[in-house]
Image (cartoon, rainbow, N blue to C red; front, side, top):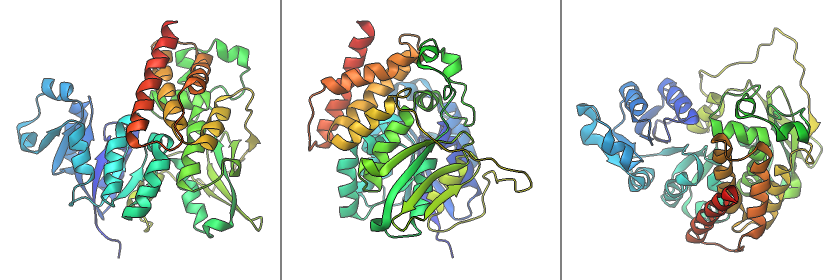
Length: 384
């Protein structure tokens, strides 16, 4: 019988977190022990009314100070990043759904790994920034990292058909975003609204802009390199506009296995929370009464140079991923705020990556320092 699991959903008010709450509420084997949010504390309390966790965590102390929590939750509210780390490593928690966006989720993810927890990892930046540090820790503590990204979940599932040493390459699919057919000159004039108009997925603004620049695939290359212990040359990116094939795994005998499903994040979330069991769920299903056309074409790295940055950072390791991730996060926000043009997102990231002081074997403190430095450099780049 499937085992009951106590779950902490960190980042519950974001797009992944909201889906995770819906999924967990429908799983008879799941008990939501803790929910965390940052500034949208009203939504966090509404979620708490639904799933009745033991604890709420308000990660932003300033927002928590200004918010009037319902009296019934007051004894169960904890505040700040230390509370996230506390929840991630708590003995009553079996599984952490790590969905805090950006480097802000790294400390709690590291704490969960140190405590030997199962980590359903939706925060790709954790491995992009610190995969070189976190994966050896996970092997030491027995922690299990299960990807929630649809592409990496697909690789995880397809790879179960063989042994790790039998994998020849993996293929990450990309929708191509709203600009997959645009020229570089046209993209230079792209507006905020155009970049946010994703053709198939409904995601938060940061991830949607990453899809438009294809920086999301660059970060996924780095994530796959660490999560599956691959050489960057074993990772291929293909454009797949229908977003039905989420990734493919090619084995050394020539067999290629793929995972297919509609573009609905509830499926990889549920698989991560219920693994190794497959349970009935609320995710959308493919309609087998209609004809399907599934297209795959090589990604154009000349039009989407973010991919080259991803391969470069994956090859180099060390602090490269931390710098690229932080620079991109700040550059995307600057674009959303009207301070950078669309193509300047990747251009500024390349310049910062090339200028940074590289450390080959960083500690977590080194990675946090590299992250902070990259953010300062992007701020200078914007003001220049």
